[in-house]
Length: 112
Image 1 (tube, helix red, strand yellow):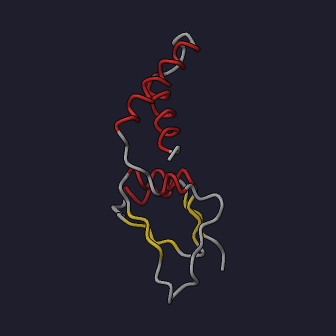
Image 2: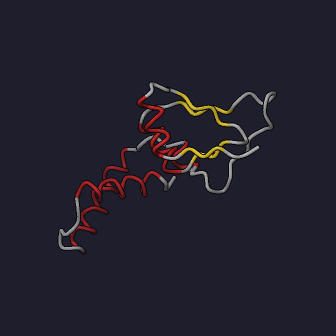
Image 3: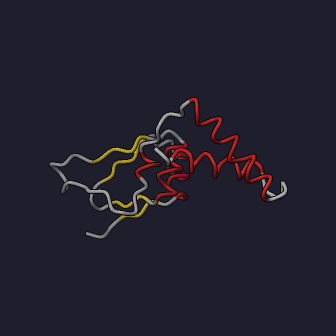
């Protein structure tokens, strides 16, 4: 049976149709970007019933950090501020602050 691939665009289309959860089987591959988009939309990602499909296993390309984000600790805000300050000083402020915040948040969240 051929694999079904879900990308960011597929998740956007599902959201527009009012889909709130996505069932994943062994025949479904969700890209990292699609998984992050689904999380942004608070869509529920579920494994399909194992009796109707073979047990699904995560491939090496699945971003488990994005799939199971940790909660932000009190020290994270201080760490993010230090990193942002250092990057801005190094680049003489020639960087988009919003993009920098997003990158720093993603990196810090993947640390633990």
